[in-house]
Length: 185
Image (cartoon, rainbow, N blue to C red):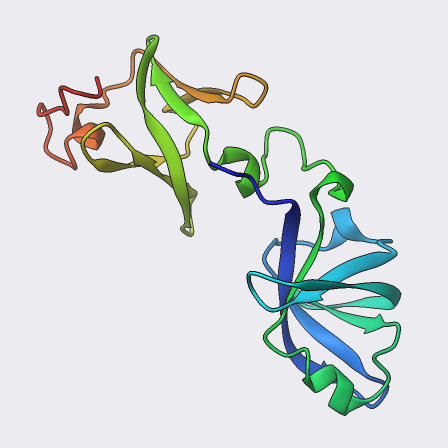
């Protein structure tokens, strides 16, 4: 799986004020790790992105209000509504300890006891924890991203190691305890 070259931080939801500011709904819980960015990329989902200098920023609940250079009127800001705001992946601040960016998890191999069980293809966000959609050999299955099941995320090795003592039969069988996907166990 090809990892994206950008980290999407949010989506422009509306023009804000009379100076051409934009309100960006954040995909993360907090803007703090990104505070002080000097530039960002803005564009429609899937690109292309245009580079913009950030002239000012301020918190606005679970959103951020940004003043971008060259966007000086409400009409110019309105053109950006629906656009994604991203930064080059190489410029992404490190995530807090024991947390990972979604793009780092996507594509990782899931293993238990040395056996390959599949690859993370998608991440579902739920109120309690993320759920990884894993493509096994013959079917897709869901892996709750909890410390009870996941022993280690090894980005360098490209894999997620599950606790070998955890009972995975219900997960691998699509919720039927005792039934497993023989091809992927």
